[in-house]
Length: 99
Image (cartoon, rainbow, N blue to C red; front, top):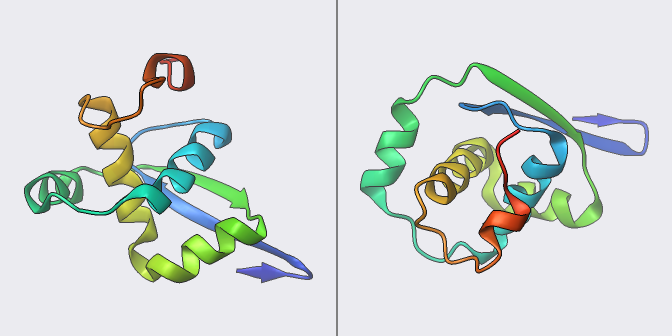
């Protein structure tokens, strides 16, 4: 959604996260090469009862344009995959901590 010169997007998430972590996972979508269909089905079945609204940077707008309506689902996929320890980020514990 565009309001003046600012574009913002509302994401439906299965887990409540602060905006900073949502942005981190949004940028992680750029590294997403292969999607595990079975894991994606698990994520699709999770209830999405939380919303996060972000004012987007130009780079984030490009990510939204790239993935379109499936951005929220892929964002949930990245979060879920990260929580299960299936993400290959070496500094996992320093970036993403419960709280």
